[in-house]
Image 1: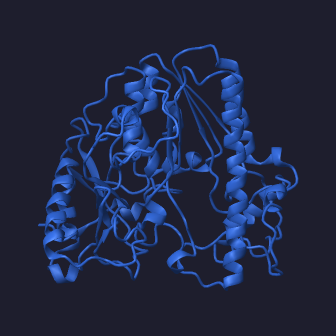
Image 2: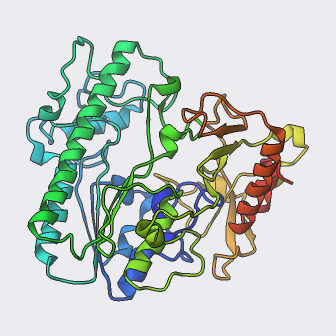
Image 3: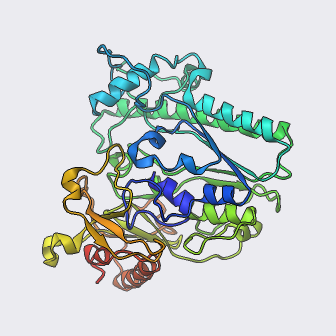
Length: 447
């Protein structure tokens, strides 16, 4: 959901807030398009929209549809104990795995059309068929896959034969790899099958655009929100390790009928906060002043230089800065070495919507709340400042600098004091531009 907030607002989320909803002061791209005569429709199987921390996103669209059953979604109710499928999520909470086992009993592996992803794409294609002759609409087809657990129809699993006699393992833990090489390869096989299933669903969208002749007047954007470790660097998943490029670099494909350019790459750094201004530009809707992203329209038209520093990261962990050549990953400094109090060091959630991913802020958390002055983008509204959890920090929490030109695999950190000093100054400038909280500079040793 932090990525969804960046998609809606065109602003960075992670400097001020962990997982949370659209805030009252946020400019929501689908809502502003709707207010300016563009019909916006969301169809998805992303169950996080139902949770406390995602509950204000889908209402921003003109209409929306949901398909149930993904990743332990509390969908079908079985009161009696259910046998948990062997191995699927051996290190995860029993409640989530138990529910996923229930859900899979309603999603037969030999019935592709029963899968939530398939149903999501089908409802998107229904929208295209129904509205092919209309103007001024935005359709967001959002599939949760390829996401753990890696549960795909059998026909796609059959594409990747394997010699493996252990229990099925398709839901890796967020952390270090503790499985055998055979188990890791088996999990990768399940992931390959799921990606192939995703490819087939994207193919259905492309085929429908062919059939309806939509390419002449319809923009298409294909992207995702994050990458995933499948045993690389001895890691599973995301978030618990630094944001190496396995997680940070994502696919981003655009067809713009105004330029009709295909089969070309662009060298400019692009990220999710650029999607909102690109769509505002496409629909001739004024870009709100608080948007930090840039419209990609000029970059789509020509591969001209668009040099800038961009930030990425996760609340309370590394703050990363890149210009496409260098990646600077700044870790928090040790609080006890700084002599700072917790109140000075943070991290804090700044919010008017006190909900986490699957819960409200607790009474105990809210006992420590303070009211603070507005930020530049909160439209004059003061905010609640609430101490944020700091669990889950890794043993690789150190500052690193990489040259992606000479070291694209990020295996050999640079030790260059002059270059790091320059990156520190550029990082400070990017934080000032984002109106980062004061404790961020303390937490990362940037005072």
